[in-house]
Image (tube, rainbow, N blue to C red; front, side):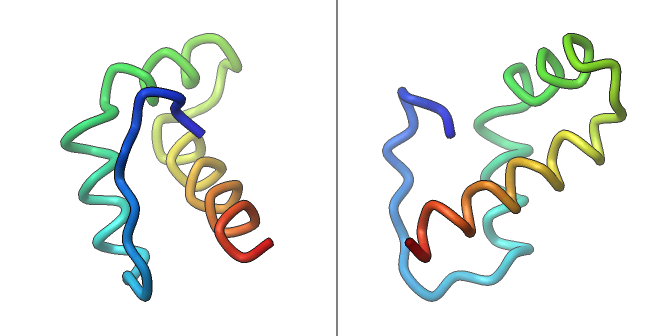
Amino acid sequence: MFPDCNYKENNIKEEEFLKHLREEHHSEITSISKKEEISIDMAEMITVSNSKVFINS
């Protein structure tokens, strides 16, 4: 999702990934939120959903 991110973990819980997003990618999530005119929570949800699809493919 974020090209510069090297976070790779197996068998993590969604809460752990959200913590990573909030700590390391807050500015990117905020940018997505503003660009797409959606809430930060929605941008986080979409990022988690897209990451699950990518990880599980």
